Image (cartoon, rainbow, N blue to C red; front, side, top):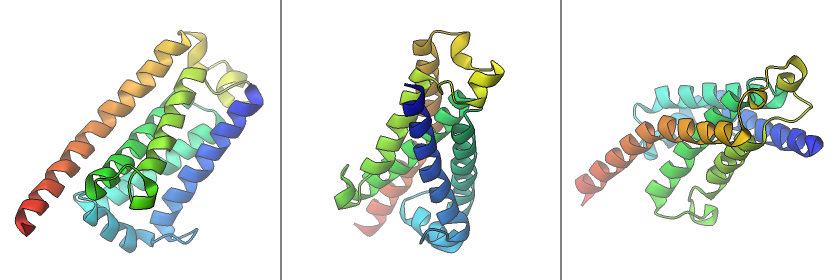
Length: 175
């Protein structure tokens, strides 16, 4: 089980790091800061450049925490919240869940995987386990998992509602 958790943490961390660097620096065939700002504007994220910078910080910090297994519950909550905003924004823009239609399927799956780590903990191959800072030793794993999910939902709800409002206002203007 510990190897599986390590692989899952490293995979999610790699994807989050790549997403952040696509936005920040155009790495991995990404749009860079200007392209990401245009995309975030289209998605209804306002102000778009500030939201891009926030997404970059969240994605890269969550990636570092998950990869190392340090404060894993925090990393999982940040990753889940960030991916919930991304997924919901895509769904709101396109009206579709499915990735093939431009929907938010992929980031929503990443959010669910991050929440899953909240319930399982980081495993033995983590800084949390080695240092004894593992949040799961002091609380029942279900409590920690629920906290990760609730914190992610609370963190994502403001940006999602703002995006919904922006896209709805834009729809009225073009009608």
